[in-house]
Image 1: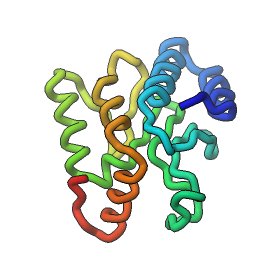
Image 2: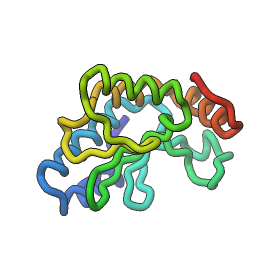
Image 3: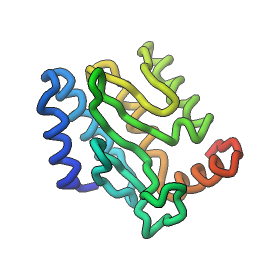
Image 4: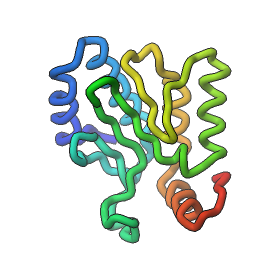
Length: 155
């Protein structure tokens, strides 16, 4: 996936007020996500987040008429955040992700689908890359539709 100019510009803006450690962590995760991203997702800016989404031309029936977000990266007042909605849509993917952290002996600071971090060393880069790379657009759409239908997805 090529760098989106809007995403790269926002990354610079997000990093500007951060400590060097937080800015470096944000840049590391941006590169990690971009490098692992399967074909078919588009990088764009949504508010103060860099998002990778399914284009509306491919999947127009979203609940909010916006492209379906697969991943997003943001900087908040107290931490950086990597949003991975797949993890709350799919208990199976969530379990694999959490297990990778546990197996590595790393502490996971995460809400339902938002990994919080301030340092790159706190992240399990392999688990993040695997969660992203293992989800082609068609599989993500099937998981999304199953979650919207109330079904538990093992996809």
